[in-house]
Length: 328
Image (cartoon, rainbow, N blue to C red; front, side, top):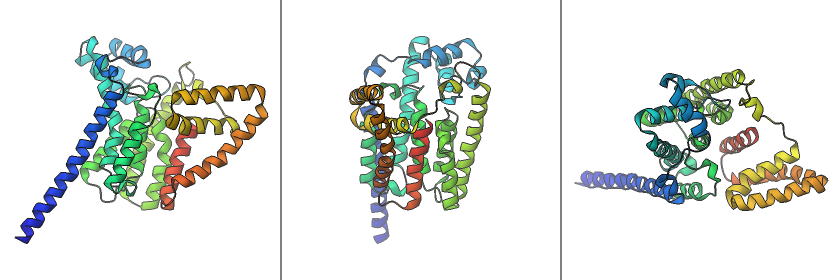
């Protein structure tokens, strides 16, 4: 009788855990839709979605559209979505399909957090807080519910997988994460920036699956590197996007893009940017000193944000920020 009651209690607790996470994910999806409801009521094909990916998918065979790189890099997700959209639906329904596809990608990071076994999200309370912070962070319209910028949501999913402990992961979780990494690594090059930290994590923990994930990103990085090299001569190649930054400008951009914009929104960031332009034109020496001092200030902030974490976690979190922010 005691065993039966204990089993019943354990089953009830398990159902509750599953239910609250599923309910939370539904709330997140609803909030995403309500944040910009017109994107689903009157869906659109946004920027390069139409003039690049859809136009190409319509005019060439499906297999060619699936493997063709655009804009200086290869994007599996965009190609796949538009191959499916242009062949399964009439033209009027393509925008809704692509918007829903982007919504599914944006839900990935929330799913990883809610079902995570990382020490970073070990309590339901921290999972809820992490979910809400991610959901309500101010964003520019460019990265909201469109396939072109889904690569940055896949980058976030890649970072969250980096923080996961895979030593005792189930086969289902293992293959799911592998699939996400393949999709992320072959959709733009930004997720590959985290490759060195996947290697570092594998060396830290000596787990086979950590090495497998690192090798997945390595293969994806090689594919992206080949695309970058072979398209470098075109006007849309990656070479046209590369610019070396001076130290003061790098310090300013890191603070503007990764702190001020997410916390204050687009309007406040534009106001500060206008002031900085004036400072560059009229008092450049002040801009130089201020931008240079912002870099050690950034190190202090990173230290405070990772306070209390194991040093290995600090390295992975701070390293991810620096690699992605500086390279992109």
